[in-house]
Image 1 (spheres, rainbow, N blue to C red):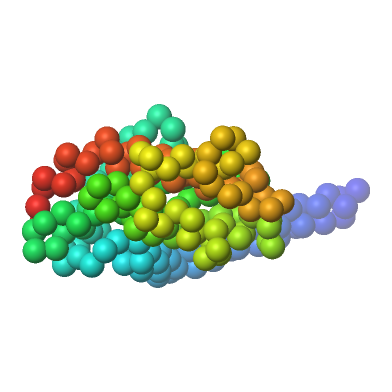
Image 2: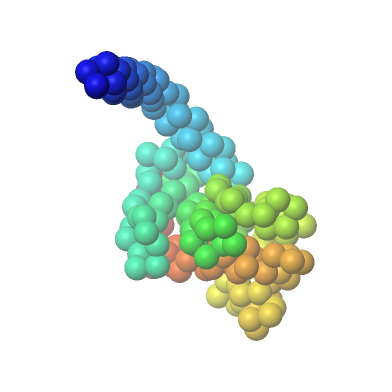
Length: 198
């Protein structure tokens, strides 16, 4: 009886030691990778800003505005851009949790009049070969040079002007909802971002 008890105790102690060592090792590795991950994420965001905005000479990341929205879990990020101290546009991050596989997050670049310059998909976990086509040029091009004040950002099935992806209407709806959220926040904050010269 005492042999079984001591075996159980030694196994439990061994498991405890292994668990503690594993936890400390994982924590240490996580601490080592936090800074490189943050740097890579910032680099990705800077590249996206360059892709969606007209030419600028300020640092939009330093000029970033965070605004609350009842339609988004996190604060909406707005990156105003200036050239020779003149407002040339803003990059706004819009998101929707209504994608087929959850979150769809995009960055939309707006010209000063609200016309879309370009859009980049930042995050998505949609179905490969279907919903992932929201990143394809053939889908994105229908938004460029369109002003959401006159161009209905809903898919055609819902009465809008956007051609949904075949077999991926849910992903298309999440994308257009994200773009509409970005446009709404751009309009709400336009006076503040266009007047604060950098």
